[in-house]
View 1: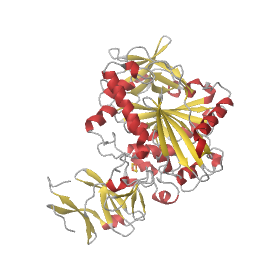
View 2: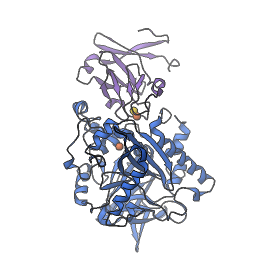
View 3: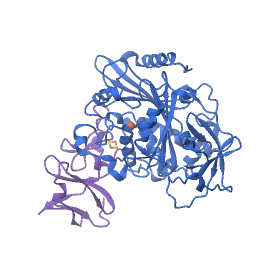
Length: 124
Length: 405
Ligand code: FES
Ligand SMILES: [Fe+2]
């Protein structure tokens, strides 16, 4: 995976940690809480742990519909942290298109999962 | 999203804070009568202060007690270890309906409003409490958020209603055979109407169903930190979210029954099974992941944390962090009551700083306040308002105590 900012790949987990029926674990990066999960396509997502709605803990999220769903009001996120559904908002609302959880690029090689850590000053 | 400065202003409640000053203008639940059964003094941790209920002659008083600065938020030393600090403030207290309330504000305490929970005879009310490790405001905000019940409390299968006494959301939806759990699941996008009232907010959630029927659920925010909501056809819940300090709070509930006396032994036993004493901390908590079970989450409940909806609420509000970081939130249309409430709280803060304490809700004439109406009804979509009223009046008319409004 290519990125424009300067930084480095840092190993944050081992693939086998996700070898379970619910492939999701909490990860701390730079003292900030994230959640690492595998979606139904087998792809990894590393996104902020607090739901951008009212801050519920996505570590207890529902892994379904090829993404992660917050149990508080059902907001649904894909592996890029993009909100794709807000089932309690009025029919036809487009608010979800504007909602994104912080996302960190990840890669998986030889059983190790690495995150792209931007250098100081390059952070979001 | 709001600024950090504003988040601090509306959440922090210690002595000298602005939101703390608003809350101190109202009676605060300080302890359950159950806690006073073995005599006084009883330790109390309230509004960032270390206190104890004592008796001075006939009067119940909430006095300051000596306590090391680093003692845990919800530590309760036994009676014989409590030492009163006579140099600290002391406040009037009053026992009513199973709870000792205290008034920690300036001037004379306001009268108790004639709400159902205070009017019902002792036989028809039951009080309990539970500890949550988070700020009081996020605890209150989940109670004025009618949409969350369709998700957080979703049951993927409907429970048998036989075993439903004393539990929330286990009845059939008004006048139908549909379990409330199914109704909440099938109609997750309520229209929410919010109306400012003399006591706070009336919140109406409308779920438009098939055949021109509408489910109408009326809940209330009672200023500053309580809610009044229906529990079952028989009972309502009046619940205060009382700060212990900035990062800890108790819910105090008065369950109020219209028709039959409350089975207090059963209600107490159900709840004591889920809590430990003396701090009333829930046995399912952050330390044991709320007994989270992914298999259950896949098949049975939305959270995987069992059937007790109090645990779901507790997880939701504790998981936000000690004080929810509202600089990162994105409120939606479903949060309309929360938005309205924060506006009221900010107005009250502004009124106090202008020296207009009588402009706060319920600080003036409260003689006309009754109820508040708090129920579920299913009505023709055209006249849901009248139907909701009629169902409430019917219940009140059949009630053995004076519940007239
Ligand atoms: S807090 Fe996550 S959907 Fe509301
Ligand atoms: Fe709830």
